[in-house]
Amino acid sequence: MKLAFKSATELVEMITSSQISSFELLEIYIERYKKFNKKINALISTNMDNARLRAKQADSALQKGEKWGRLHGLPITIKDNIEVVGMPCTSGSSDLIHHMPNRNADLVQRLIDEGAIVFGKTNLPLFGDDFQTHNEFFGQTNNPWDLKKTPGGSSGGSAAALAAGLTALDIGNDIGGSIRIPAGFCGIYGHKPSYGIIPDRGLIPPMPNLFKGDYAIQTDIAVNGPLARSAEDLDLALKILVSPELPEKKAWRIKLPEPRKTALKDFKIGVWLNDPVCPVDSSVGDCLQASIDLLAKSGATISNKKPDISFEESWDVFIKTLNGTLGFGVPPSLFEKWLKRENDIQGQEEYQTRQIKGAIQRHRDWLITDCKRQVLREKWASYFKEFDILLCPVTPVAAFAHNHTPWFSRSIFVNNQQRPYSDMMGWTGLTNVVFLPSTIAPSGFTPDGLPVGIQIVGPYLEDRTPIQLAKLMGKVTGGFIPPSGYH
Image 1 (cartoon, rainbow, N blue to C red):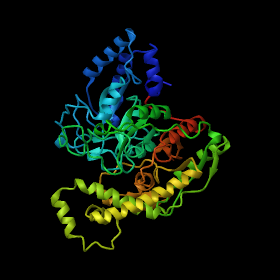
Image 2: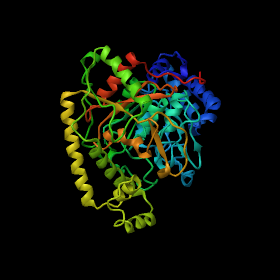
Image 3: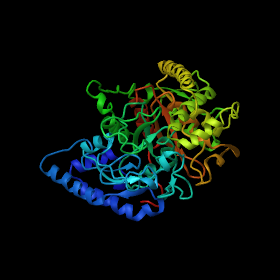
Image 4: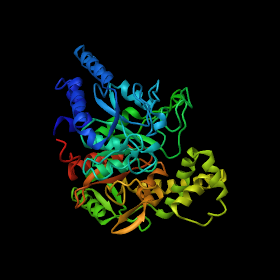
């Protein structure tokens, strides 16, 4: 495979064994950025001078016998709602175009301390609030598999850059599918970690400079995690990124357990491929089933058994907790308008109304919902006493055409039937609300040639188990394949 498309794990090995220099690899990505980024618009700011200097320093260190860490000399990019010194951090907002952080986000610093070289930032929707990637200042990011289609959101720039071979590794975040949807749409790997195991300080929102020390707002449900071209890279990144928040490190350590199983034949896998609450298009479902059939032929134990939970109940808990969280960022004037509508919208169940009700709910209501969440968590835990993994869809559909109409006027089409746009986070919300880790792996293509990802859900804090299955799947179903036209 062409150098630019190799995994981060392979590239670090090539750098540290002097098969290629860090500077040479960086120049390859810079040339590809110049050649391809204009048509996909994945990277929206760069700091090439600093990256070149650091790459030369990385090469010089190796000549002296010094190795910085597990990512020595590796060129990477970071989603543009995570602060990196030397580049603006905008979260897709023109109001923040001049925000130049004076400190790296804690997770970025961990990557740099291991030798990574951050040379660019990747695009996202305004404050990460969409399943597509577009904002008024930086514009639209296109899917390398079909420029007329979205790469997903909110980490769409990250996924598009990786798929097109513009970077070796990227870090995004996920509250409703923002790592997993783009990974699935672009045919790459992504991992949504268990809640609370990767630091949040240095993210936007909240707005910059609210916290000047080591503290951060740990937003309910939201997590940070890696996107890559191999499951091995996810494992590598996770080992570096996992850490308590800085104020907690004086007493806490996080050590994730080893994978439950190492061989495919030893895995006991449950499957949940469709549900009437969030139906899946046959083009996606057929592709997922084909991959699962290959796993079965390779010796894995497969059972069409899901957890003892109702999709509808789980969706309700997710929407209430999600919108209770997102309501925090609503402007005061809009929040007041919502409060005045409270009595009028009781009993209405459209998603827009549920968003309002979730945002203005009483704290007591949130606590009741959180109790329901803990019951769901217990049911998932019981399921994982019998099964090692659950396989399910990432989204009901593959990548769709760009659509910049108002959010609540949009819809998707599943088996030619119109469905709410909010269905896009139906399957990802299943795991977000209960804090479970899930890994996305490539799982083939629709008849139209669009990538389909499969969601590999693991037990709480056992992140390395779904990543391990993703590694094994790659040997059976095929891993990352570069899109045509980017070689």
